Image (cartoon, rainbow, N blue to C red; front, side):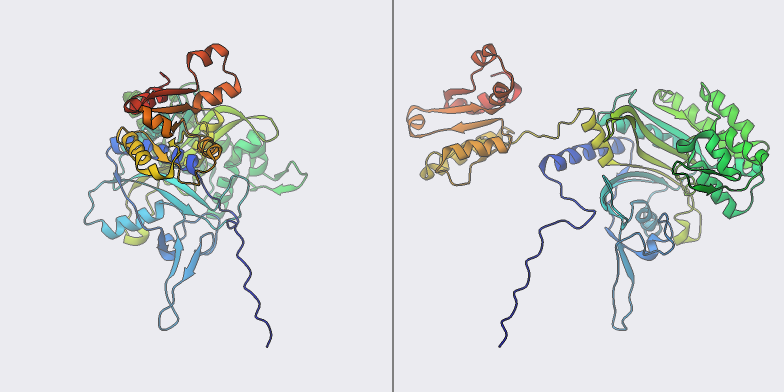
Length: 494
């Protein structure tokens, strides 16, 4: 009888495009989400936690750059007795589930419905550096009102969120545009064919990369790209391209100047005029709320996502410089975006339902704060109570209970206590602020030893002799003063 082969051990590795997050990363993200949620809540938005799985039909065609609904998502088909069943998928974003929730529960929800949602989303796309298939989104949306005040409110709330999590004024800008203005530009160009309109939109989206001259070439016959390859253009006459150029270069010194330039760019278009009027109202509402151009500004160069949105669009951009992997200076870029989308719920109800929302890229925000040194990437661990005598575990548990009741994070060392040095190594690895030591001698005298691991690290780095004398790294204190001593140590007073 042939010897049965053993099944190979599974590889201990994450799937391609996924990663694990440990202590500090999870803590920092949680704190950021709590800060953003506090702002959303302050604005009157209610929390919503929808299913992580939706039917592919519910996700619909609102997946970018795919021709089939189950491409771009992690999807599978349930099978019933006949071998058929619904196609299900992990949610791609938090907006499509909102449309389904509102359509399903609209008779029970207030109108307008203001909700925020936070959680992971999954995209079956090719991963790359910093681009994962699972990541967090943090959304807020108002469904059921076409009021421009709702658009202005989302912009103000986005500004407040950035400041709440540690991005000060001067380091960010919320930029606002309007799809209706672009529709007016297309009208002024005389471009009615939907395919050609899509080509124009794609060309406009390249403005940041190729500039005014490049857009002119791409709207016309075409251009050579950096690699030397020739890219065919849209094929418009030079005079047809002028409204697009006027639109993209219409930003003036003030909001009033920008709006005047936009009115010139749209010509006689009624829909374009409606879009400029909406931008004017948004600017006035924001100014009344104390949000000046140093925080939020009208900027026609915001074109990303215009094919999806139906009215105002906005993008939050961090304006400070960082060094890229080659040591070159560049701006950090966009960390949030959103706008008005009035067609999504209609897929379920057959009736247009106005909606506006924003999505904040939490992981990008965290990366930005680390770049600026506003997050260390390290968190303080618990106070570690060492074990000198296995038979006195109850005494050590009493110590951590007292510390915890005082709101101090603490734990008893639960490994093998035989080697005391290993206990201190453990405390260091946990980034503990202090280790508590109570042997038989200390117990008899009613004292404990507290080793200041924070100062110990500083001494190892660059603390002076005077600092060491002022605050020795280990102190003997009465047992009944343990909590007070640790509290002072954590405040830096001991």
